Image 1 (tube, one colour):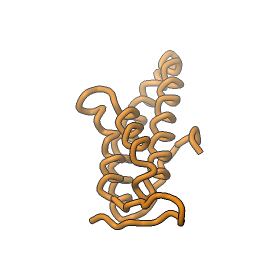
Image 2: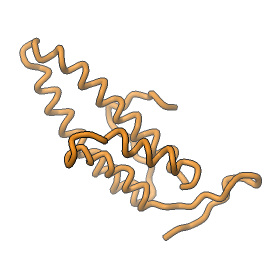
Image 3: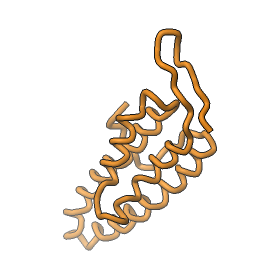
Length: 125
């Protein structure tokens, strides 16, 4: 179902496409299949569709901030492995978070909500 929105008088018409937004959230799970791409695929979808799809810009920023935050937290966990193995526990927790929250937020996005990701640092405003 595509609904068209006009952002203002002199700009292009934006369409509402919840299915594409949901797929953008779920595209973070591509890492489970191929081992990489959890940042690249959503980034490509966001950059190509942010001016065409209503609310894609906000969803894309949330996803990219979440993925960049996960990278930072993984980098922090590496030296923590030497300190009583806390880094291993951190990797397990980050792994669970990186699978669960894209699915939860895809469901929220399908209902038209703009979900927030936990522990997400604000790299892109």
